[in-house]
Length: 445
Ligand code: GLC
Image (tube, rainbow, N blue to C red):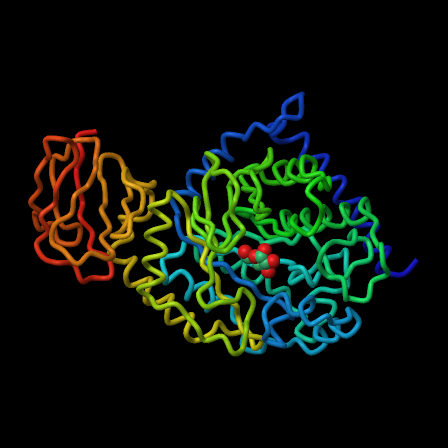
């Protein structure tokens, strides 16, 4: 038995003991029939998640080195033994977790979701269950996830972990639709072994990095629809270790028992321009993930960044759909966030400094997003976000009665007329030309 295997065996025993304690010590997240009942702290975390509204997604791994996005290994058909060599050259010399977290916080984002392990199977944290990780396989040798976690806790921003359900490199991950050219033998797979591996890693992630806001799964679509991922058991493990940790799964399907948030990829709930979103909209807190440029992982030639105005509009419309926005950045192989991304963070932050109150803590407003804009609501305050209107009049088909209308930014009164047939007509002080012209209505109920 190699030293590594001893290390693993010893650690499995330690984790089994910790799990037993966790199981005994916390309120059961599953009832006798195995049905999932969220704990009070989980429900509280869901509401806080919804209130936070805006997060930054980080796709960072050794795939940042070739600079062709996180799917490069699969798309270019790279053999795993060649791909692995990237690790021995990974030295992000300019990485500074404090700077990353500060730049992200400045945007007004209230959480960070970072890839702990993506489809290429490389772990960005110090795991005992594989040597293909940042501490064992790179000259950098630092647990960047730990550094980011410590900074998030220090600077007061929530941390979520992206975790891939699929793996293009391991023999024990059952052969799926993707990762076919990585050099594994045809028909490979040992599900019990892989399932144990994932659960061991999830246990590390939920034990060694402080409170974690969410685990963000991805990859179900790699297997046939009837594949049994044993999520009941895996989700229960997560909820036992950290009851307030929310579980989301980017499976593009209807939600499964045990999930606490519902994820949409590159589309707002109810839309399907990217082709990933035929699923029903559930009553769980919703989150849409979207890229700042075109790719998740760093792509060297992709400078196609959306403008600050486009990004703010996307955030506002997402909030109007009652969902959070998880906006992605692909950090560079040298450890820096791309300069344009940092600039966008700053621009969004300046807007959030003024208008955050119309976003944080709100829910989708009475009128679903329209071509002219969107509405968000907090108590009896309805924020009308006018994003694109070449007129100074706006009719709102509102059911409730308006008591008062003013410009959110400076309290200037806005004329309004309650219409006989229902709804209200706003007479704006001018034709809007701001990024977002926000009118605050006070409703009777
Ligand atoms: C897709 C991609 C993945 C990316 C994710 C982010 O599922 O496979 O690379 O991480 O979307 O939403």
